Image (cartoon, rainbow, N blue to C red; front, side, top):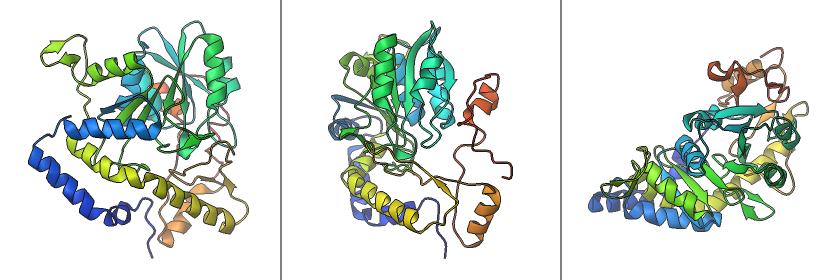
Length: 337
């Protein structure tokens, strides 16, 4: 028996005719860059996330970068980023011209610790980035309260949280703007790369539209120095097929997680769920000593695993100069790996 870490084939098998029809539709229209499929997906995903605007872009990293820039954050600014996250969260800040300032995370959830974030607010802090890691919305109430007190923007890194909710409100609708990734293994994944910015701010959306498309407001009218970070029409068409299935797929992930919780042996440290934000389990994280030997034992039985995330982002070469005290973020390195 083989249990792959991500079984995209099984996911696609149940919707294969619809995916093929969407491909043929794009091929007939010859609209491969932006176009009607992108516009329709933007409307559908904005409606799903309960936001006024969605801007399709080329990747999740592009979504976060352009969201920051569209919110007016850039050179000379600092953005607070949790020290336990995928490196793209911090690279987006760098790509926007700002400087990431790292804070520690909660021990049980791996999500941003708002008290730790408040402790690193400085004169140049312009925003705080809440990362909804593993499919669980972080403490957005705390982030928003901190933002109001300090005059900050709040960016949501929702790359692992398509369909996650906080007290019934969708991830992506809670802050100033949000960045989603449609990397193939995400809960809502394209058949290539892709991303989206969601926001209720019309000015941010308008600027993001221009930034993704070489600074254009209309053809030949380049008002700002933009980027080439557009969502492909083909990927938008595939995402339109998948979006109606997302809630059902997320429910299946939660059911699988309950089976794991009921049957896994004691001695494993599992993710703490916040009752106000049921996790949709982009991955099912497990912490234990002897990680590598445990992974090898699983591999011998055909079960694939991955490591999220080690070394910690603050110990990666682009950010190793930081001396951020983040013991919980670095807790992923047990003595015997």
